Length: 273
Image 1 (spheres, rainbow, N blue to C red):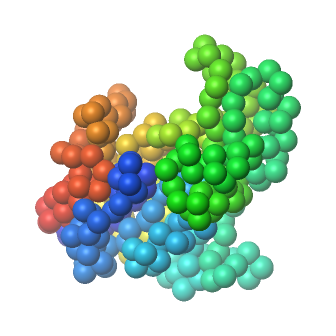
Image 2: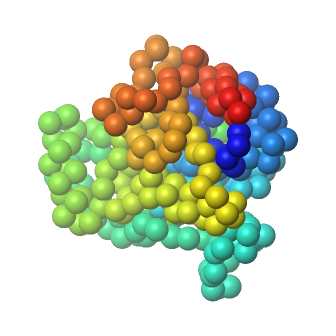
Image 3: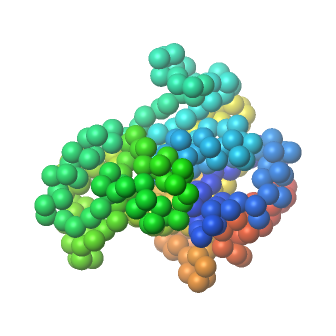
């Protein structure tokens, strides 16, 4: 590419296969990004603990967007290059924690009040074993998934027609409801798109040029992210169905699901130049 390139990616059902969470099929593209020094920013509903573990496994050194944009983690050694000036007290274990949403405690307070009127189950009401059952994660990974800071995943148990009333109740409390691949997510008035815009600006400072941006996702909670970039890529589901939205008419649909589709799409885009 003649312009510097920046890649944002969802995890579950995108870089990670939906059923087994494997990213092995994406290894060629991941290695190509590293060879070309193209930043790869992981953007997910996952917690910081989950994403830091995956970041280490991938050998990734770039910022992370956790809990659907409610929290951005920037490695301490990236702060100066990205033009980020912060109070040292906001750095923990070598990462700057940029909180952008609402504290989980406030979210749970609202949800507790709504539980008598609506049928749902959040992670806060599940044991680690129940999280394992609903996610297919290992027990260790499920425990990390339950350690949330600024959002709450939930299973909707009510009727579909009750969902809009529930959404309106959340909005009255300055919260929003996002639909993900497996769960709905209750969070503050922020999203993946907000976080992507922030990091695009940071990397424009770093590159001293406007980067060519790519984003890959598969679920409704990826829409805001996909709408922000030059080259949005939609990863299809196992049955071939895929995310659709009028604002994404120019998006590319990957030829395969999960890590395999991610791999071919990323290689194609970064090799165009």
